[in-house]
Image (cartoon, rainbow, N blue to C red; front, side):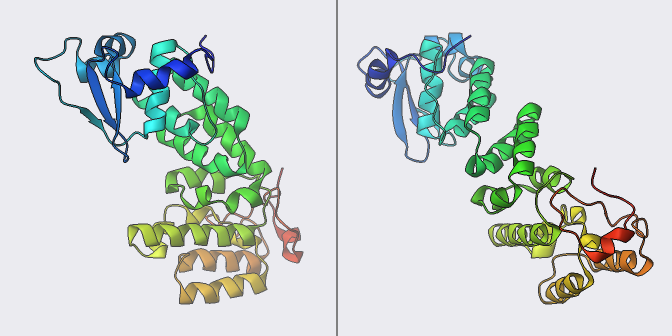
Length: 286
């Protein structure tokens, strides 16, 4: 099993990667910074099928054109090369997700496993939502489960991070579906609204349209009547939640039964603050 880092390589690799004099026969232009990185075609092709397909094993005649890889950050690409040359890699908390992304895209399973192990070790409030997004994007089930569990335990802090606001709808769904979030529903509604506002600004789409894939997971029936009235008024000024979803929550209040509206979740979460009407709800947090 490769190790995180081989210390003898720390001094040698920068000279190898940035200097064309070490018999390198391929130049990569990497990232938005357009950093030139030099390497050896045969070694990369032998170690990685992605590079074998990209480069082949025989250099062309004359001076080969640089290979442009604009989507991978330079630091992540250098980590990939470090792993291919030494079967070890030095990982950092601030760039490990970019290295993980490259490892998945290049089909480097051992590097992917090293990155996953490292992410789990350094997972914190600032990193967790970004890690969740990567996990959902690439179908990394175990990492997704670890991220959801971390968010459940540190819900209020995680909801205030930039990473939360940048989650895709697909990544946000499993968070909003969790019964174990340690946050009250009123705060969760506001966090979801903030998320939708950011998405609306980026995508230039209405807030309600951005929120549509996830908003049904908000459990409005848990809110007290005064809170629900305030939410309804705010929703008139800035449409966010479908009107029928608010009606379903009111129906739950009127009939005082948790099953009054099947499409309006009434089950309490771990962090749900008690309200008088909760005693009428049939479904409790377990």
